[in-house]
Image 1 (cartoon, rainbow, N blue to C red):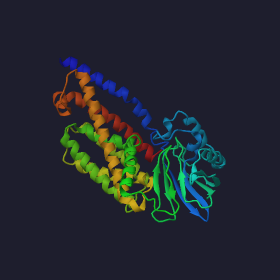
Image 2 (cartoon, helix red, strand yellow):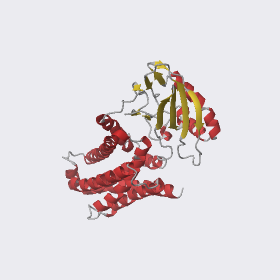
Image 3 (cartoon, rainbow, N blue to C red):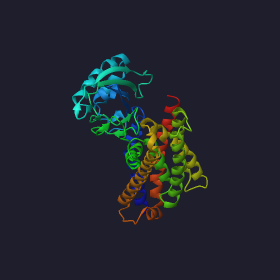
Image 4 (tube, one colour):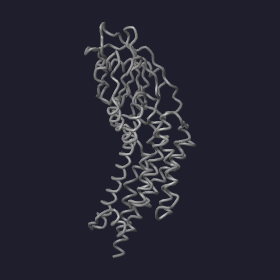
Length: 397
């Protein structure tokens, strides 16, 4: 019986290592080509429509489907994107005319239901100091507003990722988050189309969720590290509660601009927090008295990371609190989803290996502590290995 159980445990460890190899290889590139939203400011002055964008021009020109990706390395045609990224800035700027022509064919912009032709006024290319990071550039477009025009409507192309559109120069201005293939609906040029609190709250929940699943691999690994200490509900609740409270505090402070720390400092520390949690799982057999406090401290760091992402999307001034709460709720749903998936995978894996029906995770661990320990140690080693690479990458490379 013991021999059979030992064989199952060894096979389980081997299966976990092999199935996780893809994660180990792919994780090192997860931050290299991160997909970021396009941000556009819309204004109308003396019959002229102005649109100023902060945009990854190369990603838009390459035809990569940004709607379903968290990083461009996962795209089938990533080589086209890499070729464009390696070009000098003036060559990429010259191709921006093709992008505008593609938008006009959609059409991108309509006034009172009629297509409006765009003019490319200026392209400001950022310096490309690191080919492993996305290059965000400035794009200025103009168009003539038809006489008597009252509304504008913008349709964002399918595959173009997320667009944050902010109306300028009017009261109760429109601010919206539009996904690929989506539309703003008619926007009154006189203003008054600001979203309600509930609308803003609802629209920012997916933003927070997406930052965990699928885009937040570092946060996913940290949450998994909390889970791998013990599947008993008590230790998990203590840790998740401490983490949630901490990152909520610094997320709010960071979004308000009261606390600002450079990403070059925060990102390596986030990776280091994953290393600590992973290797404490290996050395400790349960919740220590200091672990919730340590997790709270690490949660403060992760909250600053969340705040930097939220800063990319921007928060509507009139609905700052609903947007902030919606984003945080989305993050929490994402974290709980990670834990639920991990618990389900653990239960199915141990159930398959043991070929016995169990009533839940606690009963499973009580009956097969060695089997759970195999999952915990192996998973923590993989998580720690990935995080060590990130620490090195984010400090030395």
